Image (cartoon, rainbow, N blue to C red; front, top):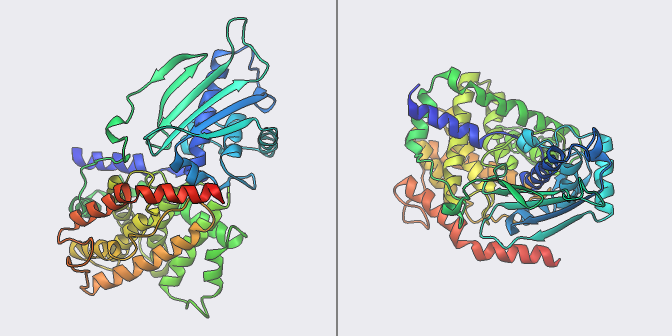
Length: 445
């Protein structure tokens, strides 16, 4: 393995990881859990075994407007509730920060009951932070009516910036414990430059040793389980189930409707609070589902072997990571635009297409659904996911026929990298006012 190949694998591990629940409220739960753990570590006499389920917490959560937008209406795993307060309460009662984006993985019925009690007694306060960071959470936790000693009032905070699981500062009793370098260089957009190109991604996906990329098949394990859960249960709007149950009528029993149904079903389950994790991409579970499930559905439908599937998933995930690097983790542009572009590339590869066809698929996607806005995470995202899959398959089929939107059209340029940059500018800069208007509408309903 070359050093650059190792770098690319490290990028995948950094951006493709299991996440339980929508990652915005989960980031809140993670910050709260870390603050509670700091209190426990510094007040051993005050915090005996099992104390968290009994403690009278006071929790103040300050978040960026984009975190608020994506956390207001999404289901929190295992609770039957939506929003930041119950996520924060769960983080306090049972969160384990060592689990990262699976911070509430070990929740029990008793934990859920206690978290709901904290919400009901208004122990959690949420506010919008005055910050330029698009992804920002500061969770401050205190123990009501408790002092560790005559000198110490037990309270702590943890701050997350720019990545959903990136804790950049912690404090106990007004003393800073840890402070890492803030993401000041990317404060305006949260963008990252991994130095990738579509050419490099394509070459890596085709030439990397299979044993070095086989790990990506966990995409199939996690996201396929979510899809089956969505089809078997009654989650959210039941978009995936509706598509699958109408395959003999409206949708037809072809690959397209199968891919749409399976992908939407996984999103149905996740956005409604299913307790199964998704394999996320670039900090988004829905993006991870959308980037992988159309490719996995193709492999199921046409009996693709594991190595070809792994290479297709590497390609689709890296294309999404590459495009997302120009947008930042949170923007006014719907993440399924990015993710379904990645899956379009995976489908092209599985159909026998090469580099030129993959570039054409990206151009076709950029000229098709670039304008889809993100109006927060919620059960309705499953419908956008299904639309993204439909566009991905359409773009792939056209690309395989030699059809590519010409550079005379809109934001499309001759060079696919320039098209990707244009898409990024629209989402990270051009749509800032759109983002603010969406949030204003959501808060004033």
